[in-house]
Length: 94
Image (cartoon, rainbow, N blue to C red; front, top):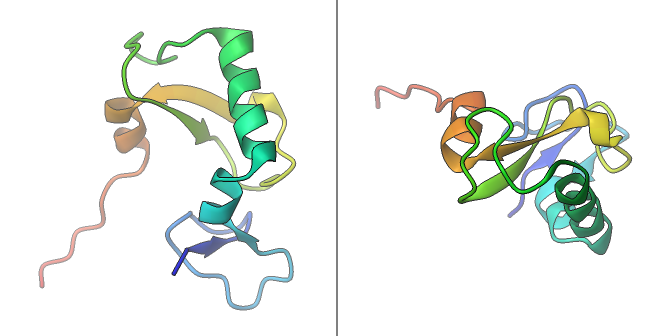
């Protein structure tokens, strides 16, 4: 089951009432996202914009407000480690 998000919620939450839901994981597999991802790399190179690492690169959404039609300015190239800092794990004591 894939997560569903809208512009008002983080990627790991469900938005049952949103009329503009996008299946986030399906979107990341779409030709449109893959083309946008490559456009970010073509524009900025293949290095983390925070630390400069060139391995395990991700494209990070600064906002989900425009998901599916996001401008390149809404996206950042981050390595896995820096991307993980943007999405800290929730603490679960159980």
